[in-house]
Length: 400
Ligand code: TRP
Ligand code: SF4
Image 1 (cartoon, rainbow, N blue to C red):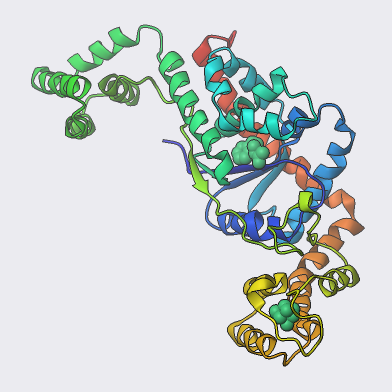
Image 2: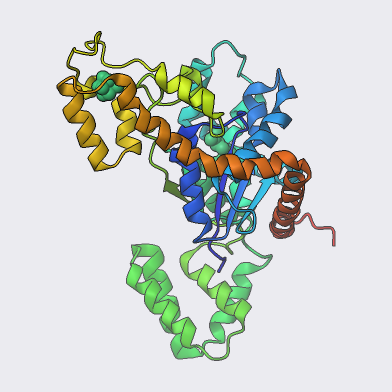
């Protein structure tokens, strides 16, 4: 009934690094070519853990959007916006909060995990507990069905599905639904009405899925039903209400295998990153200073690439010829480590060149970014307002 739509959000953490590029952004860029996509800055989400120091969020958000654009996220293909600029997210969050069981929130795995991990902060707040619900609102308000997320976020998507189901079940019934459905059954004619009723019973009592299929076929062939009546009978058949909110599914993004400068995974908290648009001299310096196999003290000492973080970067950036060269020459001390690092330096600089160039356009004219975001905000808002109209109506809050 609703179109396919991808939605993903990212917390504004300041400058992104090559791990984000290889893990998330490349994936977004593929998706934007295949689906309508919405990508947003989750600035309210940042507040759930950073409420004590919110001042830097706006700058981080702008820097992050420039990084998206630099990486190749294309504002003519995807809608880019900022969560807090679409206040409908908050309205849906509030309305859903009324019907969200506390236990569901307390059982989300990241709740206790994050509280323990970030134990220097007081995270026993209402907002932090409600964070998965805020994420659900982000998703449901766009009726997005495809949510690219890392593994840690999959339970949140699952939570969102349950919530959508609960909402549809509770409010997806128009007043007098049962009576209206029975009226519509009569319009099928006595023979078909009997068959429909039998199939419905078979499904509801025995869970027989073929009964649903046959009933669908029957409804499709029924001539004298209006669209509304057909919808009602579909809902009546399965015991669900009308679908107001769409149940989303997770598109699992593989965890980034991008190694950092020390061989651990690249991550801001390990201080081992290269940022997306880092200047050339700094990239060169960082790679030149990278530790190598500790056994190679002198040029004449043979090494083992498996024990060397530079090798992990070759695995990402070098072709087979180059990798074979490293394997062979390292093991027989045929090259020095600086020789070995040069192709990695070149490859990273080559990868970054178009990013730096694209970013420059936006740095030269910050108005461009503001316009992209303003456009995105209003496109997103339009979609969000459509959903909110249906939600308010379903809950009897439209005061029309
Ligand atoms: N919770 C996500 C994170 O911390 C960010 C996010 C917020 C999100 N809302 C979303 C991701 C909606 C996907 C869809 O990484
Ligand atoms: Fe590492 Fe290359 Fe030096 Fe071998 S030659 S230790 S792989 S940097």
